[in-house]
Length: 272
Image (cartoon, rainbow, N blue to C red):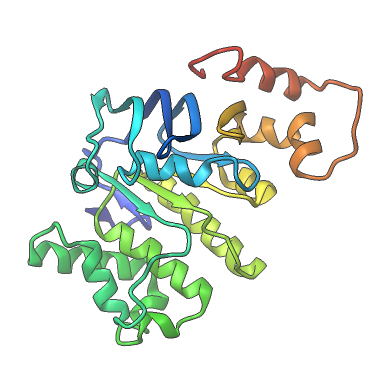
């Protein structure tokens, strides 16, 4: 459970999840979307960046057991199961794109579903802790999820995932379709969750804001990782700035650019 000294904080004896992925390939039927991806998700907040169609959502779905995958996926050195319910038991939780709430159920009922693997007493205790971290939801427990704003629904989706007390939380496009103020609030929540001891893997199109809260980042293009490195370096990288932040083209290669290229999976299969 969480200490109340810090929102989302895990107990001191809880291990911070460390995910290693080697040679991951996945897709839909005969159509391969991801090709031989190798990367790490270390404790903290890791962000996967890339344009529409790059394979970001496919990656999270494969890790969560919603798509068949090839390759090796290790959680703290042990092979990650392939079935979704076993993956949840291992300590992973996914907040899918589009939130995937039950709109005709109340906020409380949606939260209860987040702890469906726990005993009733444990589930109620977890919900109380989550409501301490999401006080806005405590005021809306009887409200139908479908009547909430988009930002409130996204907050509920994250809270529901936290009821399962995950060690690794995966967020798929949490800022999609939200007002700038709510984007800032949700990304700040993701940062606080990571600071509290839950490893966070986030897929996001809002490159500038995502890199501002992340520790590390990877850039995915057409199913292949093309760059990686500390978030601060990626934010200053010429390659990323030109491709995703609208910076003018330049013939000058910065130190950040060189560092990023040195870490690229195209040149080094296992990132440092």
